[in-house]
Image 1 (tube, rainbow, N blue to C red):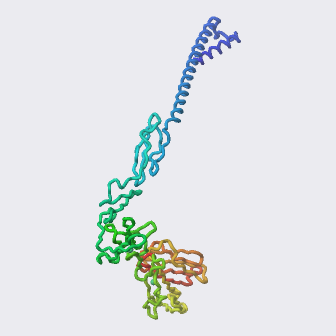
Image 2: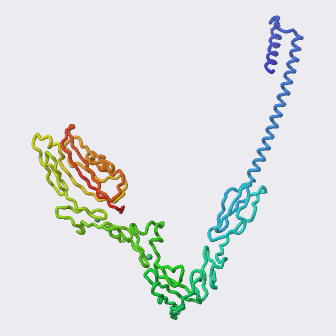
Image 3: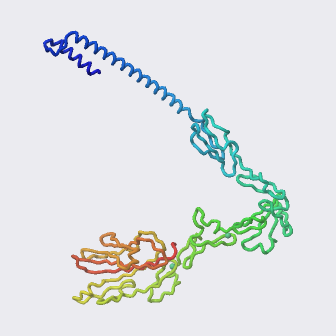
Length: 446
Ligand SMILES: [Ca+2]
Ligand SMILES: [Ca+2]
């Protein structure tokens, strides 16, 4: 509508400026009619615009009042903060309208007041603030035969009437074998005259004292009053009690309960360490507790020992002689004997003692060339499937290869691996050196 009015005005303007524009221009009457039409169009347009503006303003006002209310609501829609009762807890953090909080008391306490409270529309909580009251264990009258109950936090104790004993004063005091001696502190009842059947090493008489009519019985260290009877003490089974305590096991291997105490024991081949808790291997080779013969060598292992004998290998085309207790070297090969020159130059023997379940990966042994003649050193793992399952050979520097344990081994077992170091010069082999490593794996991890 607005565009057609603009076109009409433009046409009238052009014709009024250039009367010679031609017969296409309308006459004066026609122009006045057109201008009236344009005026009508403009006033209709103006009215519509004003209406739109009024509507827009209304909407803005509505939005403004709406957000105002919301802000007011969000700042005031929570109930006052609630505290947890002393010796108790509060569950639930939201203090919004409709939300609920719950209260719990610590063990040995009971709740008094509302267990849960709800935040209401009026921004107040339902119910009353609860408190935690020490639970009265004496309420059920647990002390028998006229005993007086003493309420303590989370437990109770009984002060027994004369002639009664036990946790709940359930046992009559066996007066017939008690001898009374007067002391300044009170009367000491030496219960050493208890029947013999109940005084084994694990059951000992308690020492009881009567002070102002109340009997108090105590035990030697390592003993405790047995549940049934205050007059006898039973050995504490520390092995059972501390079977898997927070500080770990009492003993690394085995715990043995003893009257009034306990001790740790170790398997054969081990001694208990000075701390009394761990096990230490006995070095049978150093202490001559071995039966190895003169031509054998004693190898100390964890939990035992091994007698080993190094015999030089018998290989066709070559002869080996022992140059040290652990090494065999090939005698020089005849000239032009290629079969002989390709056999290993030397064999070295090494024995390792390790504990079971050793963590992996781990370097077990290093083989190094003392001097190098050729341009290349090569390290290879020899041996069967068992060796390949547990070991690999890596080069650690230019002249050193290392035997790595790649998976933990469960003992007791013996593993063997062979590391070959070959020396080359322009790809021609100069020498082969074999290192045989025997690993004695113990049964235990210590
Ligand atoms: Ca004990
Ligand atoms: Ca040993």
